[in-house]
Length: 349
Image 1 (cartoon, helix red, strand yellow):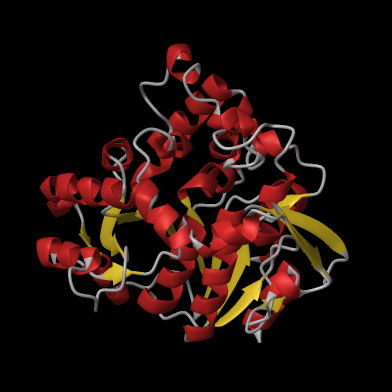
Image 2 (image 1 turned 45 degrees about the vertical axis):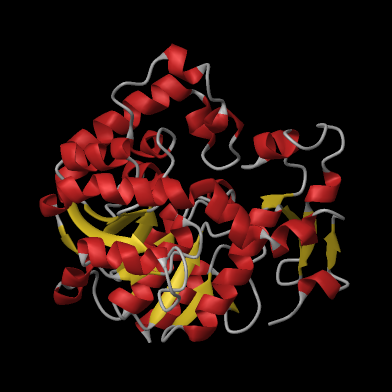
């Protein structure tokens, strides 16, 4: 794997490399105990679904290919739903919970929806929060700042829309729900009547003594999956390790932002403001040149870490990986960076 920190195609902020090196600990400190607490609480509702291992007995999409649909900023630039529909693609469509609204609005029912983030209040918003109020919105501007789905910036209207969509289509959906998922997300998925398949996130090396992952497996007897720190990577791993797909395409997996995106619209802006002033955030970011499309993108330490972990996962995978995002920073061996139309052609042959 190419070391982008030493590449002429990369400009690394002075604080970014140090943070990336410590991301394992930072991530554990941020969500480790929360994930365990959620898994303990979700024990009470595990009988509302099945183990994700049961998906191996189901035909998820036709053939041996899958398309992962995440919600990176390239979605609004490339609008892949049009090509997905016009191509007649019949393989598995596996999406992050953050892109389920985009797909259903465009007339596409995903074969599997994945959720993993343990946050207690934010994640349910992608699925519609029945209890959302103006007062709640005043306490968290996360969605107003996002450069992912701009329609969420008009939050109350967007919430009403997704509530209606999932009330109508929820019973058609299958959800791969991590035991780390928050109470509101789990309740919402169950309330819409979706079919649930449970799995444990790999919080650490299960071969280690006192492994939290091993403890989860002892507690609930569910398989552990390396989620790569984010829902897009988790969806990829499920396509490879659970569904045994042989060709996996990716859209909306940017792990970065387009040049010109205000720092305020990046995911970890509020965390950076805790340690730096808003006019001194350049040192926290990395700029990377994508030579496939002759464009620069910028990313933060968390996304860069996700990218590096994904490349490691792809090296170990049993499938061919095609990044059809047509933007972002996820490229390097063994990933093939191609257009979505070329991916669809490849799975027909």
